[in-house]
Image (cartoon, rainbow over all chains, first blue to last red; front, side, top):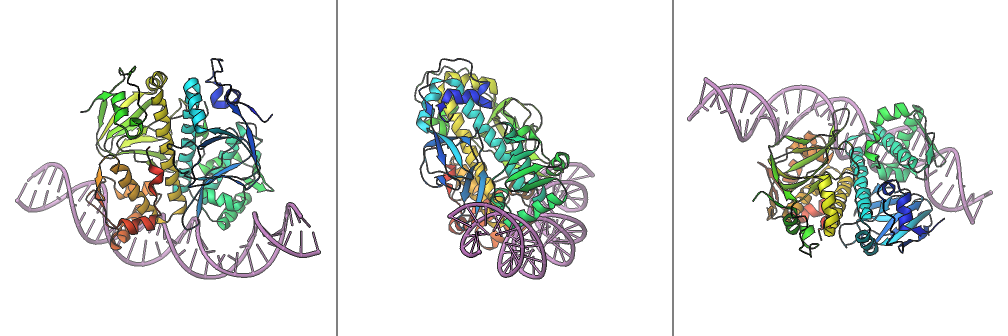
Length: 238
Length: 238
DNA sequence: CGAGCATTTGACACGTTTCAATCTCTGTGG
DNA sequence: CCACAGAGATTGAAACGTGTCAAATGCTCG
């Protein structure tokens, strides 16, 4: 099923489920229409004004910000259920949103979401919590680039992805599909593609992880968690 | 004046001012009491449950997160008007909140803020925007540690602080008080104190900035902005 | 089958860290 | 009011992790 109402979405969302008590559905008119994007296509460009809010229905998105010299940093890879595009003000976008894999997005005009918020209080609550969680994720990402070396940084990221995907049943037995190229991984981790390659090789040699043909498999969670200093608390949804 | 109501605060806040239209003040009972903390004291510890929300009235706060090996990353240095402690869930805190300078904080139980939100819609709106702005700041911080070298990273941070302080008239003529030690700067920038020292020395030699005796002065904004690739758009409040 | 992109590997360069010593403040007690 | 203690700032030399450049190999899709 590709289309649904916002209320249906909220109920199905890990954050929203616990918040939705009354069933008045005053804004069930707010239909969510899924829009499909091909892998590598651009949804919204840094610097351009875009007042839409997106919610990932399926696929891997990519939120990145570029420097003048052409370097870029990938801020996050939003996955199913993640909300994108909540900016404080009606100004140009801070980052570019694109599709890593084929991507399906719900699209809501910011204004419509704001009105819906006024009609249904838990929605605003949910929004706030969703952004607060993004904050946690960003914080940990910052820890990564600021204070962890290539090995534990990479390990940490791969564990985070597994945890986030698990919340939607998209990972099992430590195995998940990951369409990221090593170049993209580098832009996430603040490293060079070459060094990412060596790091992955090292992790493979230590039998901690396998990453090939678009699939990641955690071989030794224990070793990996120790190396990364990973504590999933920051990802908690409820 | 040290104490005020939440409504008064919102009206005086750059974000809130534009949002507050009706004057019904249904929650004027929500008194903000400023609490004073000595420099270097700890307000709230990483890993402990703390359901308070803080708003900086004056001074420099420090939000940091520690690694097992003892390293730490300073996530942000909240300044006047900044809101701290909005976490998605009632779990242990992600980071430690402490005082860099003498610090004055408003303190609100999360629950009280949530109720106030239900009574006065613009408040929730303001909260959302405040967190969204933190998100922008975090994003840029991530760019810094991920993709900028020591020189432009340092330059960028010093420009950001000037911009943020300016919003409250706490910087003028490119000059502002900055109680940060080089050790703390290092933990913000993801560098070593030694290297921060060399970097500041270099910036001084290039006549871009002066930083001594707790005061920062931008000597050549033009050169600094070019070096940092600084664009203040991400800090916009309204 | 070939084109083009992603991965892998090697050698070397460079930015940042590490370790250790010295210097400069600033506040304090005698 | 001066001397001292302790923290922060500064400097140097060497080590180390990551980046750079370039070439080779392996995939995947038309």
